[in-house]
Length: 514
Image (cartoon, rainbow, N blue to C red):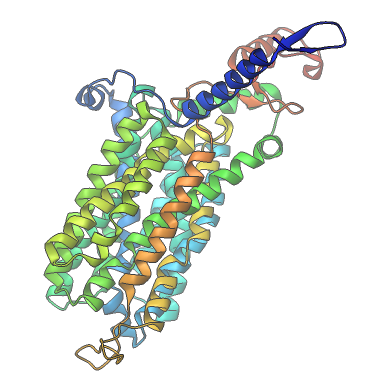
């Protein structure tokens, strides 16, 4: 057997070198597979997880869910009445959708303001102020005398809306047991679909009776009062209290901690923003313009549009809950990529279904997987966030992603109107009023196909920290970026309590949280 000799006289056979190379390749392949897909563990009974919460956990989660539901109700009040608002103000629907774009663009500011307040002063009171603000702005939206005022009010509403999701998810998930996180992550996120469903049901009699679209916004403002009352009884997060004490022990300000986190985790934060951009493209690209497509292009009646909206929102609620639950065992990234793949497969039936029944089925399944992917997000994004900034970073990354995807519906509307439907002879197809019918359907189909492909790639190249312990308080070491754990903080606290010596001279055992 031929040998490969080293200078020291040793050597490996060619077969041995090949074996080592193959083993190394197989090891890397196995690591890659395990980083994407986790063999399912024995799953606890979902009903047991639902009923095994204590009073505080149940109240906190319910409060967050209702807040997010009302956020969605207020947001979709625009998309469900786009045609009516356009007629009232004498403009094109694409101009009204600019209000949706404006709302989405201003949400990062709300996430930054309310998230910073939450990490400084706690989750409870910023959430109360946030609810109160969007209740007042929603009420005022119903009195807007023209489109410019309406868009201005929706911009302020966007700031208020931006604060709700990040604070609500962090407060809700920090109180829940780890084994229930996937299930309740899915349920929490479906507050969005529930709000859409509620808005659909409220808008139906308004449109059917030709009543004013303004009632939608007044109703949303009234619902918010109920959520504010419930939130009065929600206690502060214990995790925040521990983090606040840890900062005090280490003599570190929030500003200093922010710098340390961004210094060592900027790449992770950038990934979170990109992931949330494609997630928001997925949801807004499949939802915001769809009611207008049903009514303007397909000529659905108000009843048919409402029934279709109810059907696909029921699919969304089911998908978010089920996929969220199983993501605790199959892994977060695998679940997101699988849902994106399946959503892409049902685009043709969702847009080009040959009859109303097939189109409704396609919409149900597509939204099952769109919101299935979203059901994973509250848990996944909060697990990726450094513990000391769980009030700020999840919401900020979400809303920056929203900013990137803000123009989804407007892009679809403008392109659809620029390239209207043509008859076989090349002439343009006209509606009952003699206007060209915009081709919203084809635009949405192409848009969603591109988004699904990009989301699959983005989900698979990232990392996850599935079932991370949220009750474990860790701050970042200034130099290394490693975590300073509870034991280190406790020891330093005891030392400071028993000695007047300079805390800067005390040493801590630093261990890597990665």
